[in-house]
Length: 238
Image (cartoon, rainbow, N blue to C red; front, side):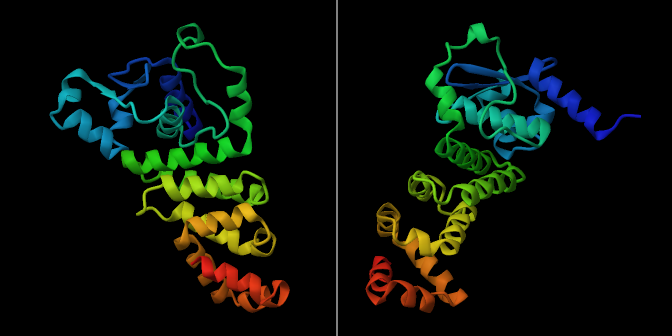
């Protein structure tokens, strides 16, 4: 009797080997062999492209140039296995000899905190773009775990800025994580000039943080701890 893990192994093998594939996703010169029954049933974007009577319907090939291959790989990994690797690559779609020689610095960048955060952000954006709703909670969870572990990292203000400028305005999940993280650690972050600059740049973010502090009753404590001038400067941001 087969088990869910057996089925997962079968799907993973289909992804790894590309056997019985009946469609291709081409991203910046990298070809991903995929299966309509798996991809199109989980993504409104790919379903429309393959079944909507466009050129892709006859060619069974979809060109995606605005995203990067690493993000597409993570999206496909989720569609086949319900998981993706945030700091590396789960699967290899082509022999290494067919790909460009790896850059040693890229391997290092894949594991640095900022890169991991942006990987999850890009997966979240792709999930929204491709209409893969179940992928959003996973990307959100991974981003939340990153924020919890790295709120005091020097790259945290940069990640906040990336999220505020890159994530579509109708999607508030990642923004909510940032607001909650800032509110939780406001007493440490308020003395960071780079963090204050980010709040100054994105007034809406400052407004949400202030609203959260007021709701939690921490505004008075902030005033007592840092003085009226610091609180006034923070409020002035919004």
